[in-house]
Length: 194
Image (cartoon, rainbow, N blue to C red; front, side):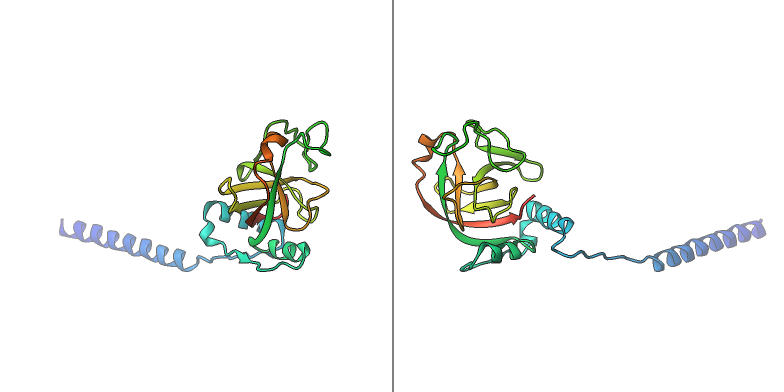
């Protein structure tokens, strides 16, 4: 009987030793591959946008004191979110010079009518903005400092008088937009174009 117990004990020790050896070898052979992307690539920009959406404190935002040109902003915005001071006005789809079919200028050209929001796949329901042609369609900005409170907007429209860091916020009608006036705001661009 002792002999049988000794054999079982020895077999158990051998099995335990083999399991421990296997675990040591298996964990020692693990390699971690870290892949980095060029931050100007589309996939990297999308990754920065997703990180910013769900964990904004993880993304460093560059603050631009006096942007010389929109091209300077574009170069910086392609790498990370940027902040800059600008001006905001308002308009309605029935404004003088606006398209008669109440569609915005950027594809997918949704009809707006009295609707002032767009359902973005990443950021959800966002306000529609008209901006200088230097801001590509689909650009997403957080606007702070307006009487409307903090706004997340998407560039989907253009306007003849919209130049530089001036953006126009869409309201249900031109009559409603008149009360907004001209306001100095801070823009934080978190996505540069589609």
